[in-house]
Amino acid sequence: MGGLLGVGGGFVMIPLQTMWAGVGQKHANANSLVAIIPISVAALPVYYFLQGRPEVDFHFALLLIIGSVVGAYIGARMLSRIPERELTLIVAAVLLLVGLKEVVAP
Image (cartoon, rainbow, N blue to C red):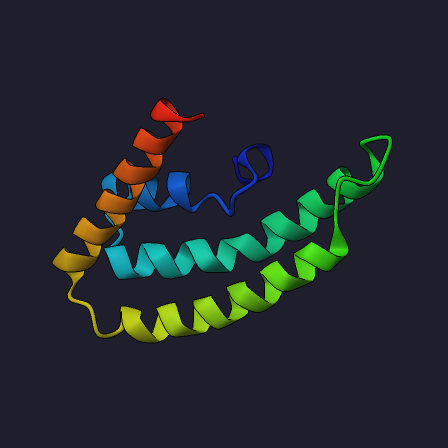
């Protein structure tokens, strides 16, 4: 799903882990972050080499990498301070907002 949707799969993996596998919200978030690494490594050659022409802008990707690393560090630090219930509500609210945005302005 991550390679198809262009995301790390968190919008799919986190809800599946919490609802179907009974994993706690904090562990599901952490698992999703770790899973991004092999998903990204597997998808990069397909996007770069097999599309007929490169679809990857490495200059822009570098900016995304820097922002993502800084954001992941800050988010992981914050994760340890947010209670499980509140974190679940925050994740649900973000998923709802993204879903509504896609329905209203795809």
